[in-house]
Length: 245
Image 1 (cartoon, rainbow, N blue to C red):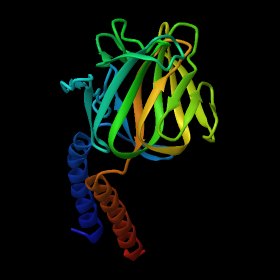
Image 2: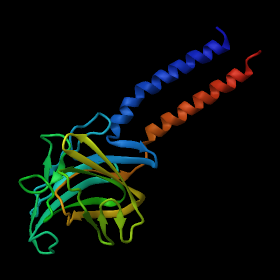
Image 3: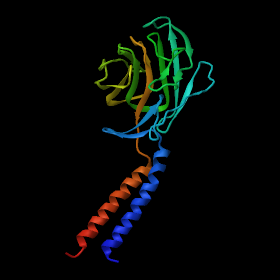
Image 4: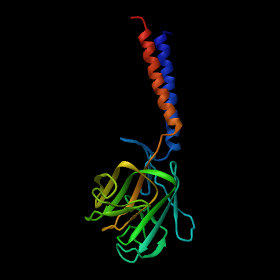
């Protein structure tokens, strides 16, 4: 067998091995996605799901104030709270409730109270085990009025609508319609927003929180496979150059 044939066989074996490992890497990092600006974890609270981006199903933790917990490979446990206020825009809180996760129909997600939506007099808060770099939010709206939402944490109180006003430099909003009567607003922060918790409140229209996207790094196995693939390609190219004309 010629050297070229042997190198071709070796490349085939390595490619087969890498393809066999790929599903394990995907399963070990649910929701890890490579976007235009790097890797992020897509923490979805809605259906439908895919093998690569699963729906995270919340668990009632039994906390006295009401709490739902979700798992994250990047941020550990994500805890969700919800509140009901005296009136839209009011600072007088009536009650803290366990958030409602609507999974019976697609394109919904986290909400509050019996209708499962985040109404103008309600809020949803997310708490992370450590500081995260927030890169995006997914909002679902049913109706013609698009929400203008207050985004709050310990540092800022920012209005999220078709853009950000206040202390944050900007956000890109991509508007699509994944189903009849449903508007999806995908908000991408121009720069990662570092926080350990945030609250969405004070909207002028009802909506669902469909997902949050936080900056992440690929797992070591994924990086190793990519490096191995590059090494194989480089090795094969070098061998070809050494073949006699």
